[in-house]
Image (tube, rainbow, N blue to C red; front, side, top):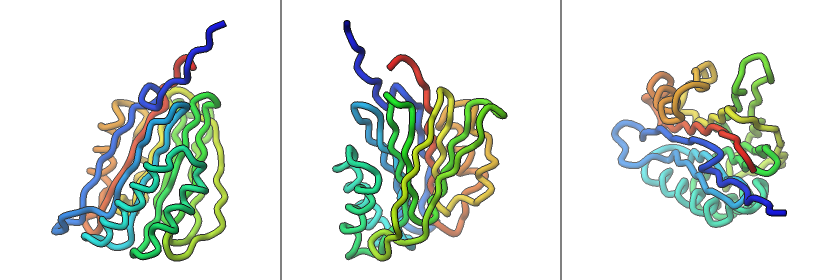
Length: 208
């Protein structure tokens, strides 16, 4: 019997990012990471403390660490970032690991990078929100308690830094492309007083 190989993340989801630096700053301290894996993908959004070049440098260190060790569990990834960010101003982030074979995501948030999973159809399942814990990666790390939730075809993951106003949770993201949804969230809810970034990823499903 022939067993088909697992689909890659790019086959599983349409994803997109919209972001901008604080007006007047050359670089943003808000970054995203998307790493396809043989059986899913790693997705993360990073918000380094403050803004400007120092924040951008800290965010790049975190992003490089996540990319290098993307195959590891989310708790291990946060611990690695914590060690690497000790000499910097630190960062907050939310990290999400998709599993294609099990149709689940495991996520973990430290600080105020908010995230939620929108079901493809209203009224069928409840919206899931990432449970974030207080702390700063590189400075003070809380106990890490990742959670795992199921995903279904058409579900949409949204991650946003605090440069996006909290009302973004009401944004319509089910329809249209991921890029259109991300652009809409940034345009409608982005703050002019901080770096801002939103990532939208849609689980497309299909044969394993």
